[in-house]
Length: 269
Image (tube, rainbow, N blue to C red; front, side, top):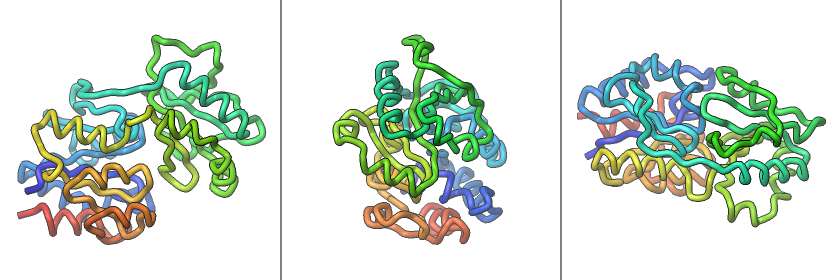
């Protein structure tokens, strides 16, 4: 029996126009009416998903969100934190050095603010275009502080050049951090061990749910740990091949109400 449905946003719940279809909304409303917890599980910060939470009426008591690729689990109504994990200033400094060597832009998310570091004057970040709801500010290494929370680091740039530079990342960085692509033009660095599966497992434990009672739905590399963790691991038809290979269910694409189709089939009475 499914008790928790964790859903990625981009390429999953959202269609190609970044909209939530009427059928998807209705399916999730019915699931919640049955007592199933429905949770957005995304790489975005809370500020980047608030309009969707409002649209889905998921801002009340008992509603949760999993943001920063599993690095923050919190209650939507009060903001109370269930679980959190973050980078240290020395991690950010380490990644600034890597970005400079690779001639890539680097943005670091710190709660509700995105800190933009001048690591590549020739290659400006496209992350502001990808996340227009977020607040960006210029930053320098001198401003790094142990008093501040650094949730994750991201490189947003055009895919061809980004992929060329990703191939040059030394293996030691993959030992230190979770290094994942969440979109073709977006590379993310998370604290080691922090994935969407980490966030879902923390919430499931808090709610006394087992992995077998969880459905996870996604499409990109950063969804892979969630797909592997969930008893019902669902890949969208538009998912990358790695996700499809690990999923035990493949639903329709994000432009064909794939979320609604799988929820209707496996979760609704």
